[in-house]
Image (cartoon, rainbow, N blue to C red):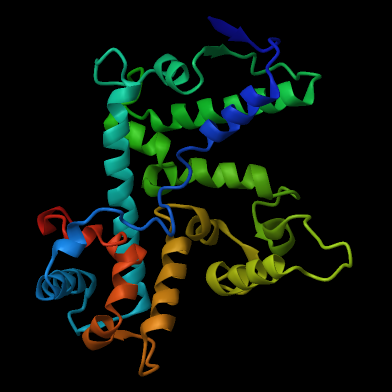
Length: 297
């Protein structure tokens, strides 16, 4: 059944729609430890050998020291690998007619259990209906942006771009446009600190712990030229491609926890002494990288 822009939707329907609209925006799940027994089955010597294999791949300059950039780039690689595996596993359930592509209609029927036909030019009086229309338009725009081969529907590579836009380089323009629409209130093409944090403020006027932490993130992680605003390149590091900002944060956290001599790098000895921290982190995808075939890394 086609759904027009004037059809009424319940709050539950809209809530579910919002949840599904954002299902592909984050390609990694912090804190999601591997629940299998593969790692526990390995002998300590086998765990060590597999960790050394991973370390050699991270160590780009082969100096047996891991710096923050090497760790960041490796975590980005882990993100991309997870995104591809996730898209590949989910693709068949969306390609309901098994023709090798996911059509817009198939996607809507799987996710929303109905087809939508919303007037993109209409502005609905009901705020909830208007929010739904806006989100659906945003979702359709992402679908069309991911469809780069000129044929209807998304193949697996395009489905990856649609479901994990922050992990695919050619989606950078879409992601930047998307973030500017949401954050750039003065429409100058930049994101300043106030826009980055938003209008959230404590009743007493004092900054909350969250505001303080976000301010530190803005200044130390993203605003590289220290001009008080994020330009396009800095915006990309914040939201896309390949979640550089999140990977960088994890790299800095790991070095802070494991760097025993304070040189800002991780030696093989420091990694081995902090084996549990290393294994239960994004750098190994919470242990998965230690048991998967290394020709796939």
